[in-house]
Length: 266
Image (cartoon, rainbow, N blue to C red; front, side):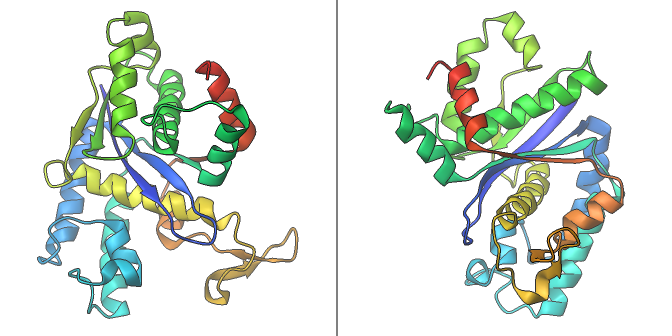
C-alpha cells in the first residue's frame, strides 16, 4: 500500500503560481521520515506546527514564532528540516502547478461557467492524483494509494465531489488507484502534512521562478545557454535531488489545461 500526503500552495511573487502536491511512499518510509521531522521540530520547541509560508517570508513571520529569529537561526532550522527529508526519503515527490492567469484565460475563452468547486486548486489536485497514478502503475502496479490532504483546502470540495462520482465504479477507482476515500485532516493530527507543506511550497516557488526574468542578484546565476540571469535552484530542492529524491514538479500550460477540460467535457 502506498500513502500520499498533500497540501496546496500559492506564491505571491511577480508571477503567481498555484500548486498542489506532496509526497508518495510506503508506510515504512513515511514512518521513518515523520520521526526524523519530529526530531527536527524538537530542536525548536516553540514551533508546534510548521507552515512554510509563515517561516519563509518576512510578511509571513509577522506575529509568528519566527518573527524575531535571526537569519542564522532560520537557516539552521531549515537545514534540519531539509536534512530530515534528504536522509529519510519517500518514494517520490509529485507536484502539479499552474499559472492562475493561464487557467482563467482558458475558462474565459470557453465562455462557460465552471462549477465553483472545480477551481485551479482542484485542477492541480486532480493532476497530482493523475501523476501519482502513472508513477505507481510503472513502479508499484499492484498497490493502491491512500490520500491525505490538509483539511479546508480550496481543492477539498472538488476532490470530494469527484470521488463521490466514481466511488461506486470499481473500474474508475482502480484506474486512479484509490485504496479508500481521500482523508482530509489538520496538520497537527498528521505530521506528514507539514512535510507535504514544505515540499509543495518549494515546488511552487521553483515554478514561479521560471517566469521571472529579473531575479535578485543574490539568488541568480548566468544561464550557460542564453547568457541571461536566471534563478538558482532553491536550496532545499537542490539538496533533496542531490540526495537522490525523485522530484516530479509539473507546470501545466494553457494547451494542457484545454486538453484536460476536453476530457472533463467542459
